[in-house]
Length: 201
Image (cartoon, rainbow, N blue to C red):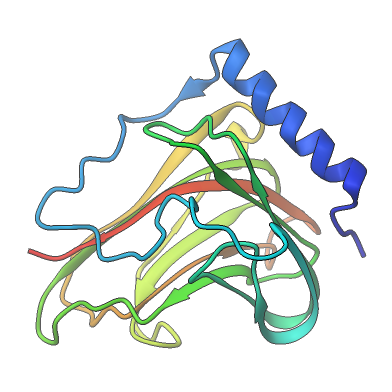
Protein backbone atom coordinates (compact mmCIF):
# COMPACT_ATOMS: atom_id res chain seq x y z
CA UNK A 1 0.00 0.00 0.00
CA UNK A 2 1.22 3.47 -0.77
CA UNK A 3 1.28 6.29 1.72
CA UNK A 4 2.65 9.80 1.49
CA UNK A 5 6.03 9.84 3.22
CA UNK A 6 7.94 12.99 4.13
CA UNK A 7 9.81 12.59 0.85
CA UNK A 8 6.53 12.13 -0.97
CA UNK A 9 5.14 15.33 0.51
CA UNK A 10 8.24 17.19 -0.64
CA UNK A 11 7.86 15.72 -4.14
CA UNK A 12 4.22 16.79 -4.20
CA UNK A 13 5.16 20.32 -3.19
CA UNK A 14 7.87 20.49 -5.85
CA UNK A 15 5.37 19.26 -8.45
CA UNK A 16 2.88 21.96 -7.49
CA UNK A 17 5.56 24.63 -7.79
CA UNK A 18 6.64 23.23 -11.17
CA UNK A 19 3.06 23.30 -12.44
CA UNK A 20 2.76 26.94 -11.46
CA UNK A 21 6.05 27.87 -13.09
CA UNK A 22 5.41 25.98 -16.31
CA UNK A 23 2.08 27.57 -17.11
CA UNK A 24 -0.01 24.41 -16.74
CA UNK A 25 -2.87 24.05 -19.21
CA UNK A 26 -6.17 24.91 -17.56
CA UNK A 27 -9.63 23.76 -18.58
CA UNK A 28 -12.47 26.22 -18.17
CA UNK A 29 -12.37 29.44 -16.18
CA UNK A 30 -12.18 30.08 -12.45
CA UNK A 31 -15.46 29.10 -10.88
CA UNK A 32 -17.91 31.95 -10.49
CA UNK A 33 -20.22 30.89 -7.69
CA UNK A 34 -23.34 32.16 -9.37
CA UNK A 35 -26.78 31.55 -7.93
CA UNK A 36 -25.93 32.15 -4.30
CA UNK A 37 -23.14 31.94 -1.71
CA UNK A 38 -20.84 28.94 -1.54
CA UNK A 39 -22.26 26.60 1.11
CA UNK A 40 -19.09 24.52 1.47
CA UNK A 41 -17.17 25.16 4.68
CA UNK A 42 -13.42 25.44 3.95
CA UNK A 43 -13.90 25.13 0.16
CA UNK A 44 -10.31 26.14 -0.68
CA UNK A 45 -8.67 24.04 2.04
CA UNK A 46 -7.22 27.14 3.67
CA UNK A 47 -7.98 25.86 7.18
CA UNK A 48 -5.56 23.14 8.23
CA UNK A 49 -5.90 20.18 10.50
CA UNK A 50 -3.18 19.16 12.95
CA UNK A 51 -0.88 17.91 11.54
CA UNK A 52 -1.38 19.14 7.95
CA UNK A 53 -1.30 15.55 6.62
CA UNK A 54 -3.05 12.31 7.51
CA UNK A 55 -3.08 8.63 6.59
CA UNK A 56 -6.12 6.40 7.14
CA UNK A 57 -6.06 2.64 6.56
CA UNK A 58 -9.20 0.52 6.63
CA UNK A 59 -12.86 0.85 5.66
CA UNK A 60 -15.12 3.71 6.69
CA UNK A 61 -14.30 7.23 7.75
CA UNK A 62 -11.25 8.95 9.17
CA UNK A 63 -9.67 12.35 9.62
CA UNK A 64 -8.28 14.33 6.69
CA UNK A 65 -5.64 17.05 6.72
CA UNK A 66 -8.28 19.72 6.06
CA UNK A 67 -10.81 21.05 8.56
CA UNK A 68 -14.45 20.05 7.81
CA UNK A 69 -13.37 17.39 5.28
CA UNK A 70 -13.12 13.71 6.14
CA UNK A 71 -11.50 10.71 4.48
CA UNK A 72 -13.85 7.89 3.53
CA UNK A 73 -12.90 4.46 2.15
CA UNK A 74 -15.77 2.38 0.75
CA UNK A 75 -13.59 -0.72 1.16
CA UNK A 76 -10.21 -1.69 2.60
CA UNK A 77 -7.71 0.95 1.46
CA UNK A 78 -5.03 3.37 2.55
CA UNK A 79 -5.85 7.01 1.78
CA UNK A 80 -3.45 9.87 2.50
CA UNK A 81 -4.23 13.59 2.48
CA UNK A 82 -1.66 16.36 2.58
CA UNK A 83 -2.16 20.13 2.61
CA UNK A 84 0.32 21.97 0.39
CA UNK A 85 1.19 25.64 1.08
CA UNK A 86 0.64 26.70 -2.54
CA UNK A 87 -2.19 26.30 -5.06
CA UNK A 88 -1.92 26.15 -8.84
CA UNK A 89 -5.67 25.75 -9.39
CA UNK A 90 -7.70 28.39 -11.23
CA UNK A 91 -8.69 30.95 -8.63
CA UNK A 92 -6.65 29.11 -5.99
CA UNK A 93 -5.45 30.89 -2.88
CA UNK A 94 -2.80 29.78 -0.40
CA UNK A 95 -3.40 26.02 -0.26
CA UNK A 96 -4.61 22.93 -2.07
CA UNK A 97 -5.18 19.37 -0.89
CA UNK A 98 -3.20 16.37 -2.19
CA UNK A 99 -5.00 13.00 -2.02
CA UNK A 100 -3.62 9.54 -2.79
CA UNK A 101 -5.30 6.17 -2.35
CA UNK A 102 -4.95 2.54 -3.36
CA UNK A 103 -8.70 1.86 -3.11
CA UNK A 104 -11.78 2.25 -5.29
CA UNK A 105 -14.34 4.86 -4.21
CA UNK A 106 -11.92 6.21 -1.63
CA UNK A 107 -11.16 9.88 -1.07
CA UNK A 108 -12.61 12.88 0.73
CA UNK A 109 -16.12 13.86 1.79
CA UNK A 110 -17.76 17.04 3.12
CA UNK A 111 -21.03 16.50 4.97
CA UNK A 112 -23.55 18.80 6.57
CA UNK A 113 -23.89 21.13 3.59
CA UNK A 114 -26.86 23.39 4.45
CA UNK A 115 -28.90 23.35 1.23
CA UNK A 116 -32.51 24.14 2.19
CA UNK A 117 -34.92 21.22 1.81
CA UNK A 118 -36.74 21.45 -1.51
CA UNK A 119 -34.10 23.71 -3.07
CA UNK A 120 -31.93 22.90 -6.08
CA UNK A 121 -28.14 23.01 -5.91
CA UNK A 122 -25.13 23.05 -8.24
CA UNK A 123 -21.77 21.51 -7.31
CA UNK A 124 -18.25 21.91 -8.68
CA UNK A 125 -14.63 21.22 -7.80
CA UNK A 126 -11.24 21.57 -9.49
CA UNK A 127 -8.95 18.51 -9.68
CA UNK A 128 -5.49 17.86 -11.12
CA UNK A 129 -5.09 14.11 -11.51
CA UNK A 130 -1.65 12.50 -11.83
CA UNK A 131 -2.78 8.85 -11.66
CA UNK A 132 -6.11 7.07 -12.03
CA UNK A 133 -9.58 8.57 -12.39
CA UNK A 134 -11.46 10.87 -10.00
CA UNK A 135 -15.21 11.19 -9.48
CA UNK A 136 -17.17 14.02 -7.87
CA UNK A 137 -20.76 13.80 -6.73
CA UNK A 138 -23.14 15.61 -4.45
CA UNK A 139 -26.44 14.56 -2.95
CA UNK A 140 -28.02 13.39 0.26
CA UNK A 141 -25.93 11.43 2.76
CA UNK A 142 -24.73 8.30 1.01
CA UNK A 143 -25.48 9.94 -2.36
CA UNK A 144 -28.68 8.06 -3.30
CA UNK A 145 -29.66 9.08 -6.84
CA UNK A 146 -26.73 11.48 -7.14
CA UNK A 147 -25.19 12.42 -10.48
CA UNK A 148 -21.46 11.65 -10.67
CA UNK A 149 -18.94 13.48 -12.86
CA UNK A 150 -15.61 11.91 -13.83
CA UNK A 151 -12.17 13.23 -14.73
CA UNK A 152 -10.67 12.52 -18.15
CA UNK A 153 -7.62 10.23 -17.81
CA UNK A 154 -6.21 11.63 -21.08
CA UNK A 155 -5.52 14.83 -19.13
CA UNK A 156 -3.66 13.15 -16.26
CA UNK A 157 -0.57 15.18 -15.45
CA UNK A 158 -1.52 17.79 -18.05
CA UNK A 159 -4.43 19.97 -16.93
CA UNK A 160 -6.66 21.04 -14.11
CA UNK A 161 -10.23 19.89 -14.73
CA UNK A 162 -13.40 21.37 -13.30
CA UNK A 163 -15.94 18.67 -12.44
CA UNK A 164 -19.43 20.14 -12.34
CA UNK A 165 -22.85 18.74 -11.45
CA UNK A 166 -25.48 21.15 -12.79
CA UNK A 167 -28.50 22.30 -10.86
CA UNK A 168 -30.46 19.29 -9.69
CA UNK A 169 -33.56 18.67 -7.61
CA UNK A 170 -31.75 15.84 -5.76
CA UNK A 171 -31.45 16.82 -2.08
CA UNK A 172 -27.88 17.90 -1.32
CA UNK A 173 -26.12 17.65 2.03
CA UNK A 174 -22.87 15.95 1.03
CA UNK A 175 -20.06 16.25 -1.54
CA UNK A 176 -17.55 13.51 -2.32
CA UNK A 177 -14.33 13.60 -4.37
CA UNK A 178 -12.90 10.12 -4.70
CA UNK A 179 -11.10 7.51 -6.78
CA UNK A 180 -12.81 5.54 -9.51
CA UNK A 181 -10.85 2.39 -10.32
CA UNK A 182 -13.61 -0.20 -10.77
CA UNK A 183 -13.92 -1.11 -14.44
CA UNK A 184 -10.73 0.78 -15.32
CA UNK A 185 -7.07 -0.30 -15.65
CA UNK A 186 -6.11 1.88 -12.69
CA UNK A 187 -5.08 0.48 -9.31
CA UNK A 188 -3.83 3.66 -7.67
CA UNK A 189 -5.21 7.21 -7.68
CA UNK A 190 -3.32 10.43 -6.97
CA UNK A 191 -4.79 13.91 -7.35
CA UNK A 192 -4.84 17.52 -6.17
CA UNK A 193 -8.10 19.27 -5.32
CA UNK A 194 -9.15 22.88 -4.73
CA UNK A 195 -12.08 25.32 -4.89
CA UNK A 196 -15.05 23.12 -4.07
CA UNK A 197 -18.43 24.81 -4.36
CA UNK A 198 -22.08 24.05 -3.68
CA UNK A 199 -24.52 26.86 -4.49
CA UNK A 200 -28.28 27.10 -4.20
CA UNK A 201 -30.40 29.95 -5.53
